[in-house]
Length: 299
Image 1: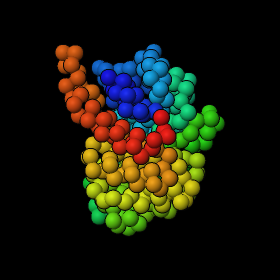
Image 2: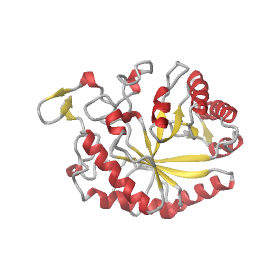
Image 3: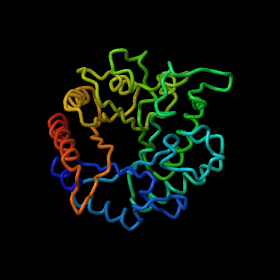
């Protein structure tokens, strides 16, 4: 149903969020547990069906952050805090690269979305304190920006060897100090080394997915700033109608390569009926209408 409506609304890509908390079982993820796991055959079938409807497939893998859904509790020795793994543990990349390679071999994507949003669940500058060992919140150390950069660079290099583009979320690359007119709570790059300083060190062939879900302003200068710095940028919205309309218009006028509609909940099926289909359908319909209007050449 989701794929069919997305195709009807002229979307051209399906971002397949593969969170391993009970959703996907691969040879390279033996730790994954849950009662609703996709197998490789099912992933391949979904990709084939989406392509038959004119949609390309880009898998999203929750790397670095949100490890409760990727590594789960399988390797506590690799963790920097409760949210992120520690890029200094080089053994971790054998696991990460095996997962990426298996997905590439199954889905044959042109790009992989590597996540990297909400370091320490979007911890803000005002919630931080320093004890000489890194900033902390409730006993959790804030991952330093140089480790974030190290992880991105290692993954980007591996994907590039496979001729696959790197996509990532942009919230850790922007801050309220740089963009005071935007909704501050979702601009997470406020701590030392993040924000513009981190952005400046990233390869320009990384596609930045600049997400804003509740902003009511007409302008989204974070997107134009990253475009001026040489990045290709995709605007991302959720379900607020005003944000969808305004951001789509702004993105089209300021050189974005497209827009992304996020849903952030799994279709819930009860007795064969998708109980939250109305919410999903509204997002796809409203976003498709706006994006088709503002990006008419993107079919």
